[in-house]
Image 1 (cartoon, helix red, strand yellow):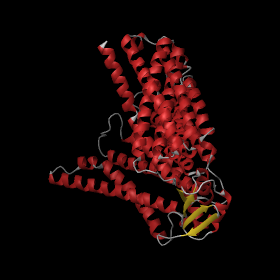
Image 2 (image 1 turned 120 degrees about the vertical axis):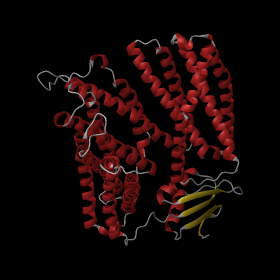
Image 3 (image 1 turned 90 degrees about the horizontal axis):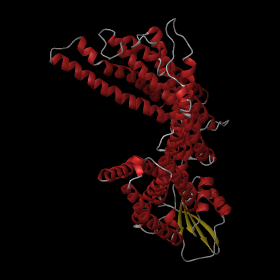
Image 4 (image 1 turned 90 degrees about the vertical axis):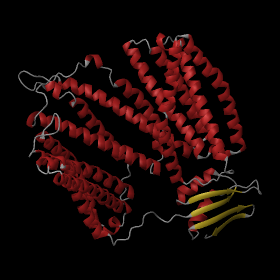
Length: 582
């Protein structure tokens, strides 16, 4: 009994601590998005965030323990594994979770509901958005993993199917409940954050599932090939793994459709949408595709022209199906997210961000390849020090990286430079181009300086210790590779920057700051931001009632009134717009 009790304690603590990285990630995302969105409603009390934090933190803790308890009890009913939930101690734990957490959570929800009814601002801040988003993500992760595990348990006839099925059912209901309650209370623009996080989680899971499916298909096809008279590529037995990947793909795709197609992708060109599509969609997918394609080509080259670690084809090409499938899926995902970006007739900053991002990915990969080539050249003068590899394979790997990534950089950078020649005023004045140049010659220069310090240190160390020679050169091969490759990149982009440094670049546009004085109206704030791009703050009047904002007139007045700071006052006699300064 004591051992089982300890097991349950460890499980609960592991659940709590496993969510700490997720908690930090969600906090950062919520803070960044709320900063970008410039919410304008002020809190009525400086102590409010502290009080709200403890209220919602307690609600989250009670929600998790209640759901864990319910899933454990249902698992017992469904016949879960006897070594997990069938003993009296675990039953007592689950009953305690439900009996204590259930009433407390119900009471707390009623209290929060009354608090929000009395002060609607309690539902429109960082704290409620953070905890609602965290609850939704925890429920999604647990439900998805449990549903997949339950499906595999059914296929394999595993005795734990009752426990995993119960957990999937309970956490699935919890996910639906969290989404319904949060959508009814939290402002929609705030709670949309969790749809993007959910889209990323489900997309990654779906990609993993699709890679597994394609990998099995490729393994089956390759197993029919013969590389020589005595060897075939029969790497795996795919009959026993026919369902591998399909379960993950099916569940993840269904959830991804809900999170991305039905919710996150409905409002395009917003900052959070562009951030997701460009960084996670375009950038992440392209890195996956290029990396996997490089591995695929490298394995093939090493077998035919390099020095493979084994002469058994099935062993050497064991990872080829997964690498090839990852390349296909990564490039497909990149193409899909690229197609979502606006393709306006007039060149936009979004198009520039996309092209510079792809060019940067290709250039960084090519720079790594160049550094490896230099390392391989130095190694060719010495006995290889890379276990299981030699200078020839290193050179093949570097050449493969450049072969795959170099054309990507050249194609996009050549297009960018062509536009610079045809439209210099627009392209040279773009802040995206200036940031791109700053990053490349700045980061490249720092890397080159650090590598130079290491090289000089190793030279002096070799001289002072009377060991200077081939061994010293071999020790500094990586530093020399980084120094030369990053030095070339930094010098090239520094030369471009010197040529363009006199061009005036505005980092950000002048944005109006509007203070609304009148009744609370979250819809007006959102409409005014969308129409004018202004930073909107609302001060609620308490001396007048039964008046409402004329939204269309307010937007028109703000657009027509000169001045970067405007005070808009609504009274019973009408609207007054006053340009102010401070």
